[in-house]
Image (cartoon, rainbow over all chains, first blue to last red; front, top):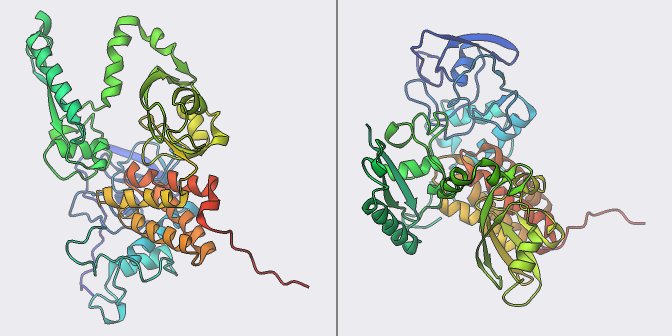
Length: 157
Length: 307
C-alpha cells in the first residue's frame, strides 16, 4: 500500500479560465472548460470506475468502465473522453450502466490469471478494486477459454 | 492560396480500383482540374491514393486517419472530431467516396432533384452490392425505397444454386440477417433500424437454405476477434468469449445459460465498445438467434414435475 494516498482525478486538469456549469447526479458543479466529465465527477466527489485513466496522462478511452449516461443523448459515452458542456445533465449510476460495467469487468476477469491469493498485488490491485466497485460476483465464461496470459507466441486468435 | 490536399484510401484487396483511380487522377491533373489554379481559378487541390493493408477496422474514420498517418489502425476516441483534429492533427473532412460522388449531380441538378430520389429521410441513390449466393450479382445503383424482396428476387434473380433464399445479410459482415418474412422492408435507414437491421454500405449477401445460421453467428464473432484493433475490452475480449459461448450452444452445453450470456455479452459489446466494430457485431449474432433459432440446437426443455 503506498504511504501517500493521492486522489487520481482521471484526466489532466484544464488550464482554461472559462468555467462551465453542469449537473452530475443531481448536483451542480462548475469546472474549467476542457475538463472531462470523469474529472468533473471526481472533483464533485463521485468516483466513476476507471482502469485506463490517470490524471498524469491524456485520456485513452479503452477500458470502457467510465461509461455514463447523458440526458438528451442516446448511448453511453466514456466520461474520460467526453469534455464538459454547459447545461449537461449526467448520470453516473443507473441500472443500465451497472450492467454494462459488470459486463466489462467480467470480460477483464475472464482474461486474467486469477491468482489473487499468491499474487504480489493482492490488496493493492486496481482490478480487484474495480471488480468490487462494480459488484462483480461471478465470471460466467468459464476457465477453459483463451487467455492472453497463457497464449503461445505466434498463435492467431 | 493554400494547396488543399485530399487522400483516397482504397483497400489493398481492390487493385482494379487503385489503378482506375490513379488513372483518373492523372487524367484530371493533365486536364487542369486537379493541382494549382484549377481551371484557371485561384483554387488549388490535389488528390493522392493511399492503399490499405487489409484491416477491416481501418474503414472506421479515426482508424483510417491513423492508417493514413502510417500508424497502427487504432481507433481514436471522439471528441475531438476529425473536423477539428483529424489527419496529422489538422481539421479534416472525411467521408465515403460515395458521398463525395453525389456532389457533382447535386451541384448540376440542384438539391431538390437529388432529394426527389428515395423515401422518408433516406434520400438519393445507393449503389447496392448484390453478392453471395445470388444469380445476378454486382452493383445496382437505385434510389432508396426499393424493398429487400425486390432486390433479392426480382433484380438479383434469387440464388445462383436455384435453392430457396433462406437469409439475406444487409450492410456488410456486421449487418443483421433478414429472413424472407422481412423481405417487405424498404431500403431505408430508419426502416431497417426499426427491424434491428442496418443499411451499412449497402451490401446484400444472399444465402440459400443450406446455410447454418449458428455457424454464421459464430463467424460474426470470429470476424470481430480477427479484425479487432485491440484497444477496447468489449471488442477485443468479448469477441473471443462470444466464439466460445456460441460453440458451447452448438455443442448443447448449458444452452439456457449460454444463450442468456450471449445476450448480455451482445449488450456489453453494443453499448460498451469504442467503435462500431464491436458495437455492431451483436447485429448478426442476435438476428441469427431471433430469426433462425432452430439452427442453434433443440430448445432445452424445462424440467417440470409430472403427475
